[in-house]
Image (cartoon, rainbow, N blue to C red; front, side, top):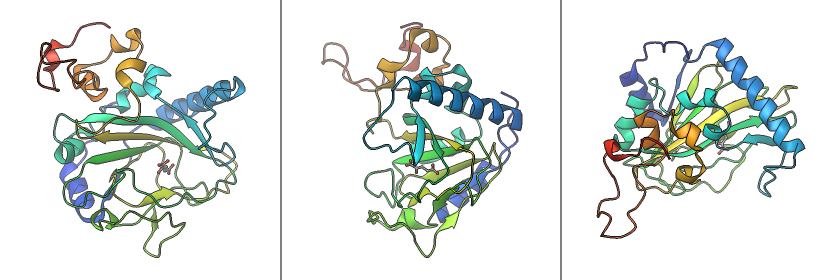
Length: 264
Ligand SMILES: O=C(O)CCC(=O)C(=O)O
């Protein structure tokens, strides 16, 4: 992965404080986005042909998913703790944050608008409990269903009743390589797509250390992947916040990173 552009983290924190979201442009190089988009399509095709990843809540005519990117291809690992986003995440979630979700999602031709929702389950209008990044792996355009957000809604303290539109909604278009970063209490949802090509976004959700991750990364990370993770990636995947078995093992949930085993 090439050097990151200098990012004015304070400016993006101000945007998130006020509007609940920000877009950081030009973080990933175009050739890298192309490699990732091609690889995601390849993995998706292989797995769907093999009948894998068929979930009742996912309609392939509306959306394509590749789940758990850390165990699909090492090319995705640097997104977990990318320096463009870490200082912002730490400001909102403290330094002992953990990964909650690491999946790629594509809109496809004919995708209907996704209903507005929040991913923090309940709103947290004062202190953020979860934050999320959507890495734009293809250009995000109006035609291909760029993510729609309702600015300021992270402070509303309302669980949206699945509306399909909102008068204050804005669409977050951007070039491939940009990252949309937002508070998970922000009302958001993918737009509809009329475009021929898939539009891949990589969704990386983070929570405070006590928020239960969507998958058990400590069990679904292969040893060969674990061996190449840096300490921060191990922390984000939750390896140092596994609850103790009982008081004879230890009494704190968080263990010092230096106590983690070198291999699984
Ligand atoms: O793909 C997008 O633009 C947003 C997806 C999303 O919000 C979700 O699946 O929860």
